[in-house]
Image (cartoon, rainbow, N blue to C red; front, side, top):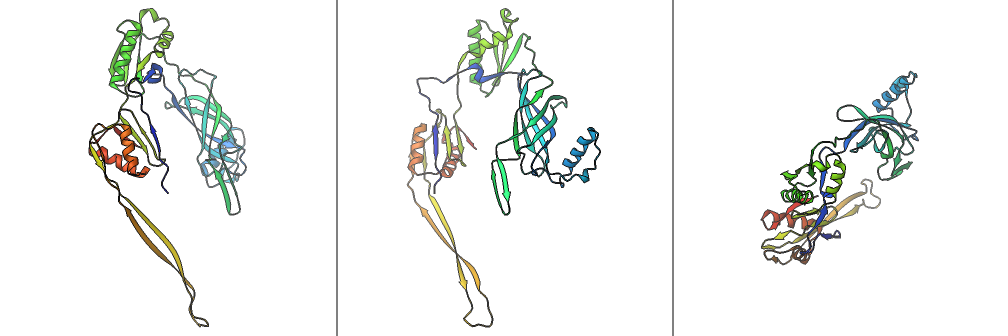
Length: 362
């Protein structure tokens, strides 16, 4: 059976330009999230933790107990109620000490599930090795793993879980906002959009306060009247509406059969002919038995394979120059292309120079 083709056309009206607020297009350079990482233990599992073969888990348990005044040899630990995990989180910009952030807990050893476990106190460090947050709390697993005898049932990934608000920030990272200038970083680098952003800021401030440095950065100088309140000045800039110029791009997902095309996608003159080849391989089993009352011989089961190949012929479809997205869709539907076929057709059109767009295959 053919895969279901889901075709999404992002086509804007030619009379209405696409616009967006400045806050959707840029970030202030220096205000970004920081990755945090930590190693910890999840306890309270129902015999679904790491086995004794995972030596670093047993060593971690022995080390934790040693800090609590209990001396034990790691080789003497036989509990499967503990799992070694890696804890990850993102420290948001302008966070304050005492605030909480979500953390993700992932098993490192051969634990089957983290359901019902509790993460013990785990320091979370940044790339500089300093501790910025401490995580602890009950984990929440969005799946399960149940087995008994020779049957098992699993849903989602029970070895990965989250703790909403499970980490408390101990050291905040706050960029300085009292400088006289700052840089706006475009989320998608584009020379046209950078120039339009600088022009819109100049029009709003009434002065030459913005300069497009390159396709990904716009430098803005804070006017003298707003130097005492840069946050208010930035809030005014965030509300500016910018006419966004988009690249011609086609995104294809062969796995899901999804194709997304922008409005600026155009085609040059081309002819597409696509033939389908269908091959069926069927296996049947023939049983050979020895004659009745034979003194020797045994029953033999031999597989017999039958291969049938069928090639369908389709006529060529011609697409004139300057074809639009709608023309491309009609042409592809006319030849009955499946999602796998569409990927090959679009790649071929791009290779011959007929597709004036960036092609991305997911």
